[in-house]
Length: 117
Image 1 (cartoon, rainbow, N blue to C red):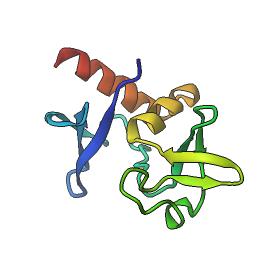
Image 2: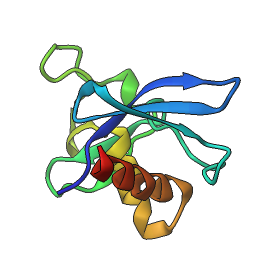
Image 3: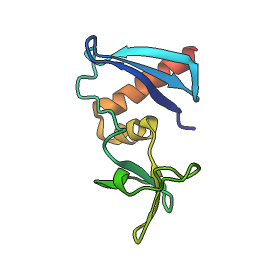
């Protein structure tokens, strides 16, 4: 089962990201991206979505401009290409495992921290 986490806070001065697990802000950890994750990408402004037809991570440039504004499906996109929901940071990082990028490395790092909580 894939680990579920989001970004709780960013400190641009110290380059520390605070992550929280399982939608519980009390289950959190801090990671300095300068310590092995200099190429880490924060996904919330990059229009990453999960294709609900096949579960693939896709990028829809400008997608956040025309997503649903209704509460339960806020940010979701329904167009001729299919139905998509916004991807979480952990889903973007998990997908990067296959490319051995810093986001994938962060996923592995956070997975190890989560096991020790």
